[in-house]
Length: 168
Image (cartoon, rainbow, N blue to C red):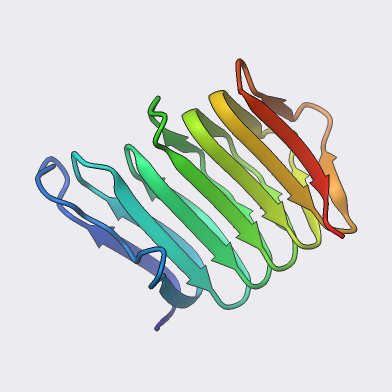
């Protein structure tokens, strides 16, 4: 369990892409109690970043080329800086919040599976653009619904499956 205000997690070294570099795993996610997070995994292979945060969390930066990223906050999860993954069908990005999921920046996702889940609401600000060129996109929102501000966009060019779901 890691506790801190501004947490930076780094696996690997910039420019050195040999070997697997992961932060947590599906069965053993890293457990945090942080206000902000920067997570980086430097590897030439598919990386894994699995984070569970107690309370609200602002995702400031995510450095990963390809792999599976799962970030879960028990409170509100805010994406405040642009996120980008490469065009790889094995990519998976899961963002989940026990309260609201607030998308304040762009998410560019080449291919693979993109899941956005807010137990309260999924809110996309006017300056946010979400792009998934191919694969699946699932947005699940609670009683607050999926709310896009004027100017926000969600583009699923060629995505095989798109689903907007209301949490029951």
